[in-house]
Image 1 (tube, one colour):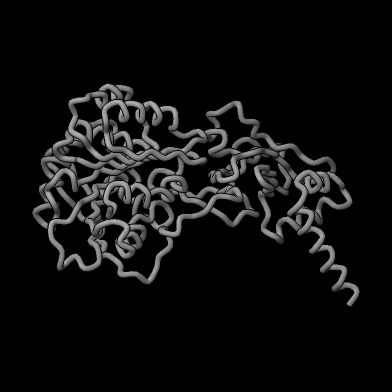
Image 2 (image 1 turned 90 degrees about the vertical axis):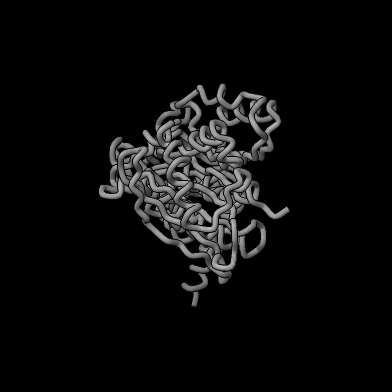
Length: 391
């Protein structure tokens, strides 16, 4: 009984320590008589990384010559001003990196051993899939005030139908394109529905990335948006899906725009009950797809009256600013989002000023996140409500 009581007291005391004093917890790791037990207590309570208010202690236990943390916080190596190298606690095999972030931040990261071996944080259960084509997960830092959007959670509400991997032979592009199409629940009794065309469609659909079909189901069931059709255009080559053509197709490509206008949209409107009104037709994308959404909408406002722009890669094509800076453009509805931590806030704010000067109807959001699907997926419902909301 005494032994059980002692264990309970130690666990209780460690919980109180972790909850009340960041500095004391770090200092206890430097006490070689306690460091192993303190580290294990943090592991047991799932408190690695150790977070208190806006302070973070990244921790790793293992043999290595060097340990560093790479992630959104240092632009995955492009931001040299962020000190990302860990320090080994003397006389232990525990490595530590202290940092501070906004209390509502959410960031992707990996641990780097010996300068070249990238691993997931073995003690952190939270992960976010990322990478072109959705190739690999990252560990995920969730600060105390960050919350996952409830619209990402599948519910028992009526679910739409998803027809995947439809092939289309494009004469404009000279190769096959693949897309998937979402039809809302009850589609059979509906007519002339709005349509959202979505680039990087595979990733927007993927449950561990965009998870957009679930968001659509929930928003439509809750009558937050009107029922709509979503066309998820896959930028991967159908016969070799390791070959992603997005850097060519989404770089303000006039041929890719022609494919949409001359081939894809007529095909969708022929096969499905889709509205032909530009005010009910959206183009949505993230990063290079955000650039493309902007390019499509401002080049052909007679086709796309709505644009969802997430973390747009405007820096790759600065001429996009001049294209959009035209007061003669028809009024369109824009929803733009960006992260504030090594994302596209500088470029997005510049575009926001242009939209404001040209009397566009727009919504603009910034979050304390990086260039990641964890950022974009949490804002998809906001973008959809901005563009298709029931007023």
